[in-house]
Image 1 (cartoon, rainbow, N blue to C red):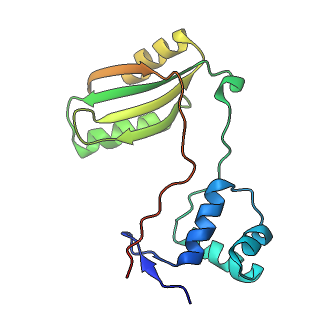
Image 2: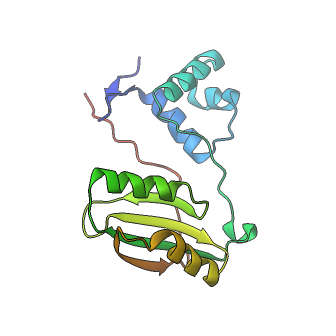
Length: 165
């Protein structure tokens, strides 16, 4: 029997759960049959483990990685934003407003000199200017700085840190 370990969220996971998570991070299109064979468990057991991982919200969903340039996006940027006040209401309002905008790919609420970092994708320089002027330049925004993204890479494997007992 695998040793059960707890991570910081008190989610009990064993080595089989870890293997399933790693496999799905590499290829979320694997079938239950393929995962079960790779991990060495019965398909019914694998299916139940996957449901358990979803119930515990370890998986938030499965997404396709797309080539943004083939979707009409010619500019990707990071917009660093400092709010005038860092109150809960102002933070929530800003985060909710940004989450409704299709240009906003990711929203990062940060501690430190910057309150928010937005990862945005736009068609061109005019779209970028309009986005910043129409949606980011508000009276509750103290400052902003836009950095264009030339290239990026992403590790598809999110690290798993479990406390060993």
